[in-house]
Each structure stands twice: as structure tokens, then as C-alpha cells.
View 1 (cartoon, rainbow, N blue to C red):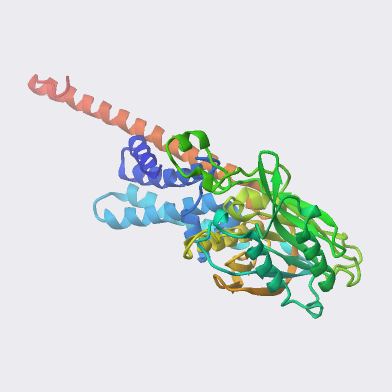
View 2 (view 1 turned 120 degrees about the vertical axis):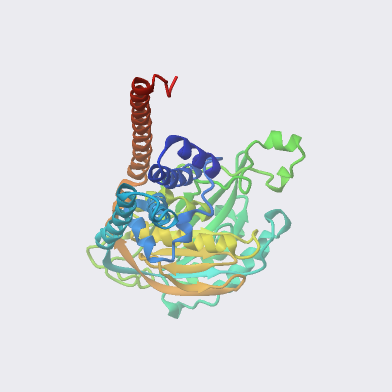
Length: 447
């Protein structure tokens, strides 16, 4: 895709400066396309993810991940323009390069003063439970009960003295036909009662012609009170596009025997807290606060898509949860990208992000993208934090990616028009020179 984009950029432009602007803009547009195609988008290994732990990442609260990629590419293109062709171009090209750098610097200054949300003054005491265990294990080759038991064991490290409001389990920890009638729910209810805390647990349930992947909230008394079903499914991980065609080619499509059923609701769950007292485990919610705290949810793969987390924040989410399961992957490549994605979502939304994984990484992430209390890969552990509830919206949270995409397309159109104008002027100049030569010597330069 990037090769095709670069080829188009070259065809749209003529001069060196036009070519640089077109290529860096097309690079960002290709990254935008990768958020939607193929199969709903595969936005891994993006430029923005590589910038998540840098100061430049703060720009995401203004322009999001696509804008971050674009402006950093513009900055790099400008430096390349100045360095690689130094002494070989006139003032106009130098002016273009310096203008590109100045714009990026101004954008970074704008990000420093842009709205980033604010704390409400209330907090939620959250415990993240990572059961641990081996990686590189496919779901069809593992015993779901083992995963469940590891998380129950880790949860028992918590005590009522920890004064927890909310215990969060990762994605896919519970794999049952129907959660409501399962022994797993009874076990969760027992732990909720023991701790006096609400649980948000990752549940895989049977559904007609497939299965659902949900985060379900269980109250202190064991009742199910809220639920979010994953909307963005992992292609070839949770469903198989072109299944019949690939089966005919001999592909191992039975490794994912059933397709996940996509959810349709907003990315939000609700957690009740007691107003004005400690009845819900010590939540510091004042007398005028709502008795329900809304949490945005992006399950696993969804955290790579900025609009999913933002959907929950737009619906009133005061914290972003990212329950995930990366146990089928080996090494840390995917897990580090997911931490990077969670960091960007924190910056973009102005919210704390709580990422909790079956085998790691699990961590709390601040609204500035700083990773706190990260649990290592494979380790069984719990981490507790008093998480500030936040309100307000960043510019990116309000506007999304559309302004950036429109601006990038406008830049390409401008470059193409300038290129055509330059070509036409050059042709007219050559024709004029030919006419002069013909008048002097009687010979045509151009036919």
C-alpha cells in the first residue's frame, strides 16, 4: 500500500518540494486507509505507535494518530529536503522546507495548551488482575478452565482491607455457553461479595452461528448489571473472512471454528457507586455526584482504533478500560504495540487507561501517556490504583480524524494543481523560446 501511495505521489508532483509534500502526505493517507481496509482495518506497526512514548505524542490530543503520523512525516520530509539537497536549490525550496518545520513546531506548541480534560475530584479504586501463564498458546489447544483458575487464584491475593471499588479481569478469561447460569458467575459473585467490590470480567459466550466477546459487570450481590460486546473483531483471529474460499485452498481455517458476532452498542459500561459514603468499596464520590460511573471500553484489538475509545468517552466514560488477551502471541512485539496504542488513547481522550491482559502487559496509563505499574509478561499479579475520574473533551475527541483527512486530501489536490500549472508554464516558456530561435535562424526547436 505504501509503495502504491508513493508512486501516486510521484505522479502528482514535479518539483522536489512538491514531491516531498506529496509523499509525506500520501504516507499518512495510507496509514488512514489501513485503519479501514482490509477487513475493517489492520493498523499495526504505524508511525504513530512508534511515537507513543515521545514528547511528540502529545500532538495526538489535537490531531489524533493520523495527524500525528502526518505532522511527524512532514517534519522529517522538511529536514530531508534541507539536508539531502543543500546548496542545490534556490530560496523557494528552502522557504518551503522551513515553513514545513515552522508549522510542525507551532502545532506542537498548540498541543501544549490544548484542552486535555480535567479531574472531577472523585476517584475509583481499581484492581487489575493478570492471571499469567504461558504465551504462544492457541485457544483451540488450551483448557479455558486453566485460564479461569489462574485469575481466581490471582484475585485471592486481594483482601477486603484493600478497599477495592472495581476489580477488572482481562478479555476471554471466562469461556462458557451462558455466563448468567454458569458456575463461573457464581465464583465471580463469591469473590465480589468477599471483597465488597464490583467485577468487570471478560466473557466469551455462545451465540447463534458464533460467539460473543463481552466485558460484563457483576455487582457485589452477584447480579449482572452492565455489558459491552466487542464491535471491532480481529480478522483471522475472531472471524475468518473468505472462509469458504480459503478452506478450498487448504488454509487451516478451523483454527477459528466459529466467527465472533460483532456488538452494536456504544463502548460503555456502567459501574454503580454509593454517593456520599463508602458503600461501594470506598469510592470517593461526593453527595452531588451520580450514583453510576461510566467507563469507556475498548476490548483488546479495538484499542488500535482511536474512534472506539472515543465512542465511550463521548458517551460519558470517565476512565478507559482495555481488557485484552495476547496469550496466543509469542514475544513482546504485539504487546508493546498495544501498550503504545493505549498510551495514545489516553492522550487523545484525556482519560486514564487501565489495560489488563491475561499474560501481560497490564498497566495503568495517565492522560499524558505515561505507563505506570506495568506487570511483566507471563507473571501472575494484581495492581491497585486510585484512579481519578475525569471529564471534558480534547479537540481530537470532539473532532475525530475527518478534519485531518480532509486537510491531507486538500494538500494533495493543491500539489497536483501546482504541478500542472508548473508544467503548463514550462511548456509555454519552451514554446516561446522555440519561436524566438525560429525567428532568428529559421529552425524550429519544438515540433
